Image (cartoon, rainbow, N blue to C red):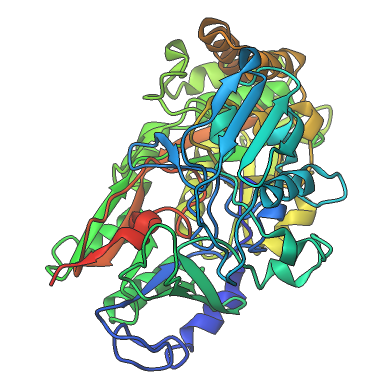
Length: 529
């Protein structure tokens, strides 16, 4: 899922009065612990589930689970539950992993190859409600070879397959007896990771304790609390009051802490972009001329400067400009004259009020953004302002995701996407027509045969040159008919009390706060004194 559900105003209300439930860091109150071993982090959203079978932690960095592989600070793959990187044979169609010795789940049961097989088989089962199933499309079979070897056989060579095996592994002896869609494992998970879930108050907080028997060594941070605070301003206020040890913040709010000697600001580059979905079925937003005009009307550089305080880059497509897969010839500046010309030629004529119309239909549509998200609000308002200069009336509305979800097949949404690791990871689910309207996949219901062909080539080809050519074609096609208006790529900003060392950031996906941020490796933190 590309956009996590945010719990909206209910979460803000719950958190605004939750000081007693989520005590100040280190005071030994309701959350317990001491300043030396307890950390409370404010994040904007919570997952819908804690089960990897339904997609939780699929890109790695889950604190409850481990995958066969993980990523280091430089985003390179490294062994986790596997002893080593996989042995690849049969011209890239067979991947063999040998499991690490002595790994146990937090309930004391040993990890075996059967647990790995169960995890992947369940995710691939069509009866499991996992919208990321297409990411494992290449798998033909996964089988155990004894207790400590797992063999994946692929239908076709998939260059990025090893990176897919950061998927967390779950215990068959627990999850195997439950319905993966409704079972208690979704809220009471058991894994091999560095932390164990101790409580989840929906819309309020999740609490974790260190796993003393973790195969990677017992963490020094003994208690970890993730406070769910949807509203950016509330999160910043609670951080400033000392109610939080750290938080993820938009750039303008993070900047207010720059002179705070007791806190440190971290900035992570990311693949996270903000875009406006333009649903194909919407009679205005789905019109190719409207889409092209909007693409030319937006002032991306001003959005970066004013909304992101410089902490980001213009987005000319789904891949950031510094990515090696970026098609360097697609960068474009705001061009209102060309936008107006495209609309004129397509029959969208300006009326007395400046708003265009065609065949009696006004160039007008609604754009939703999630309540409490100031960055998306500012993007939406700037987008509407730019669109109006071209004669397109965009009505901006805020709502919770519960309100937005039923509407997003027909109405535009200020959405967030972006995946690290390989272009296939983010682009296939964003654009392939086979996934149109599948939850948060292909929210624009985009359908372009040339893009589908490029996505299939990029996924199935082993040759880097062929893959590069395919993704170049894809990015140029998105300029000709953009199903989304790509706005900015955002750097993620975090502010944290300066009492731990060995904190680093990774290049991050859209999904952050929970699994990413300086706490991606919280199990490795060391106290400064």
